[in-house]
Length: 264
Image 1 (tube, helix red, strand yellow):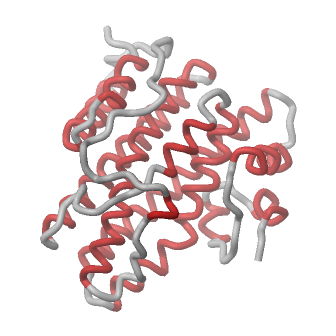
Image 2 (cartoon, one colour):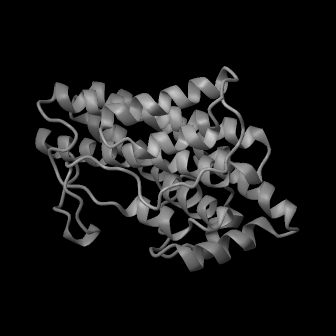
């Protein structure tokens, strides 16, 4: 029987976007059907395989996208979001493969669902880009998400604090306004995709918060204070309002976590 660790490594080893999506869906389905052992002893790569395109640039070298007022701007924004979702596939499966043995099997189940969601999100965005005459890889992108993963590869609490509870939570803050902009431009197809992603991401942030608090309880740590300490060490940016407090609270990420670190 194949192990969870082996299945996760196969996702990370897939460079072609279609292959990565298929590997993610296959791993999640095999786990759901009880066809994977819960063994997570296989070493995860430091960096996942990537296609030749898009070109990866430092964040400060990325061209300005604008706010999506033109079709070109909307394509650029959808491409950036597709790259985020593509990276998020690897983030979910690296989390399982690297740290799944430290938690109950329900941890694996939660993040397998997240990984399958991210694969579906990427596929939806890639298809939409093709409908608009573009494709994933047509524009440059940056690898900031994986940089955060690499920096926290030795500490699951730091990984949970930064990736789902900071970076994905930021999506909860900005996506509703993005949906509205697409609707105002008459791009209802893109708006529908982004709205679906938004509601799924609430569950993803909830999974991050849930297992972060589980880890804190195991170590007898105060969750909010522990999160603030880890974010201060491992997150290079700043937490800036506006915050979508209601969506964050639905995900278990209450203001006691982020309000003390918020910068105007």
